[in-house]
Image (cartoon, rainbow, N blue to C red; front, side, top):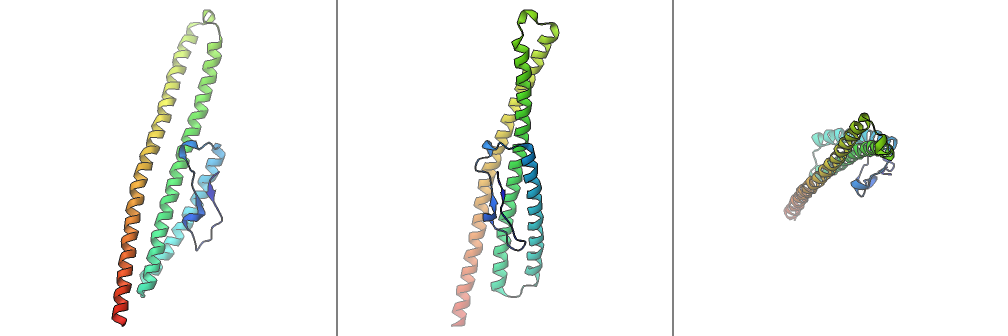
Length: 188
């Protein structure tokens, strides 16, 4: 099971969030998934409160060094929020997959029961039902495939987002170091 470890209101970091290793291997009960979604909502609310606090502190900050620390916290908070949103998406996909797996199992069971009956005993309704079940089975498989494709697209988009965020943080760190060096030179 994935989830959060204990979080304090004032300090949230990426180490407090445990994400699933492979979204395609998520097999939890719907109850577990819903519990995790409620937990996620709680932690997103904590992040929101921390964000409001950081914004307030940034507005009144008059010290460059403190501002840089606050901005670093802000970028960390944004990263954490992105990770939680990704976790939420993974949970939504897991819920949809679980629902489809259960639906597929029901269709397979009904189809198996129908096919266990000798064909010579089938009535017209049995033939119609077989066609309905086969069509439903194909639809479920297509829906599951669509979910997997969307997960792959999300993963590719997330890689790009991570690179952009890393580049932005690197630029910010580089600018901060240059400012510090400039300040040190002026002080001497």
